[in-house]
Image (cartoon, rainbow, N blue to C red; front, side, top):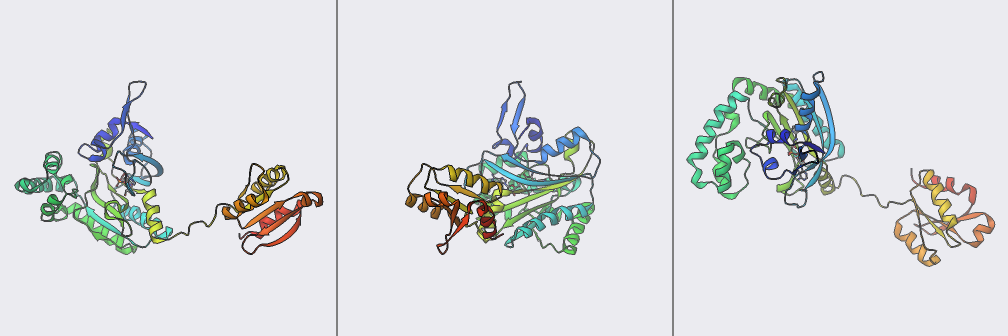
Length: 374
Ligand code: HAM
């Protein structure tokens, strides 16, 4: 959850994620720490520190912290499931990583999403493009927002990320990275596209997709859910970061990965209705109108047998306890009164149709287990 501040200072010099949204503080030992805003920086820091054999393929599920303005689908603490694959430049790895995230969404049952794909080029093509882009944006700086004019000085690419009205018009006519790829970066991008085609993953080229972190090179991608509002519709994204290990003081080592927001993915699942909400959280409810000791023993036995069980407390009346049983949504209610105690039985009531049967006390847990849908 914590990371050295410097790790992110490097990966996000010109990004909102690091400059404006990162929580950082000094710990008791005077170290500057950050609450981790994302996972890739930490994974690459660990790679540089421990130098595992490559290709090194790892995954994580972790909380991330960003001081954004909270709204539906955008939180100050969110969780990501992510993968990183470090150590090869092979475009087939890009295909593997992208196809994995696509398969994950498909396996969840999601259908209404699209894969946006772009290439940010290699250092050589990037330098040429940045020059062209900077010149274009400077020529239109009067039309840009004040924020974008500032961003332009730091990193003209970031301007393409702006959603501000005045910027959008300028951006629409801006030169595109994919028109300025070097022969090598172009060939890489072609191979990624033919690979995606070969494994049956549909994509759209999105020349303005720049992503919110500075480390990206070559392939970048984002999965957007059409069922969510456009400001928070990215359910996962990632790309190559071929220079990052070296920037962190390690040997030059390319890498690619993705992070997918768990909360947003679940919102998309809800919007598409892909998993039914559980109808209840309890299978069996115990009503004890004697003294509570039977409820204590029975719930404990039921839970040990794997039955989700609950009970009433405070020795309330039969009527009040039955009302609670009804509200719990349990399929079965176990009733223990004076008569049942005397007979060493339990009355079992099927809540759906109020049919009751009397079962010997020592058999009741087994009968309940069998009576529940498996
Ligand atoms: P990211 O695009 O900043 O990339 O975040 C990845 C995903 O996390 C987003 O697509 C979104 O689903 C979710 N997410 C981000 N911020 C929030 C938020 N405030 N509330 C809810 N969900 C959010 C990264 O973090 C990169 N580390 C991904 C990567 C891995 N690139 C290469 N490897």
